[in-house]
Amino acid sequence: MCEKLIKIKENDCGELHYCESCNTYHLLYKNFHFVLNIKEYQALKNHISDIDIEFWLDKFGETKVKRKIPVATSQENLILVFDIYEFIALKSLFFNQQQVNEIMYLSTDQIEYQTILN
Image 1: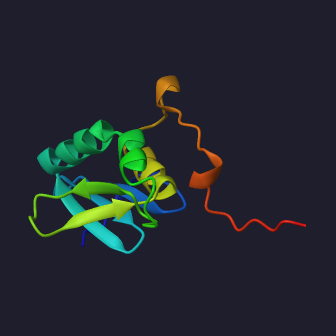
Image 2 (image 1 turned 135 degrees about the vertical axis):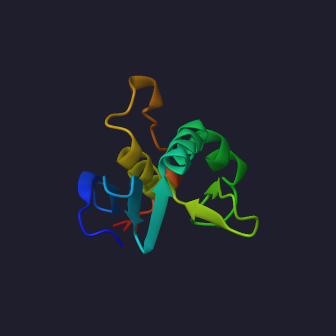
Image 3 (image 1 turned 90 degrees about the vertical axis):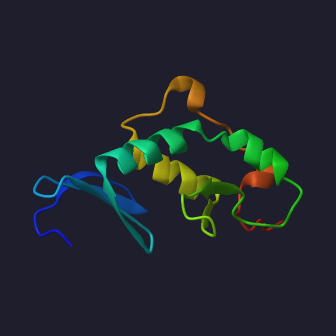
């Protein structure tokens, strides 16, 4: 691990750092640590921006699976899966701000909150 990392962005789920000495990005997200060269970083950033959240939420909308948004990796037997909050947190590490057209409103069944009816 590099000793002199420059923090680019941070949120509740992770951090994004850059190491000038070895030209690598370090993405620490929950319990994962990705070390990416510049090409890998750009490819992951582009891949994350291309994922259609609404498509995956609709596709797996009727299932009881908590994490419905898959992110394929170059390793054939590894797919990362996220719930909507985790995915938005991951995406926010790559991009400074969301575009107005990227804001998505959740329906009540997509909110994971224990309701107590009185």
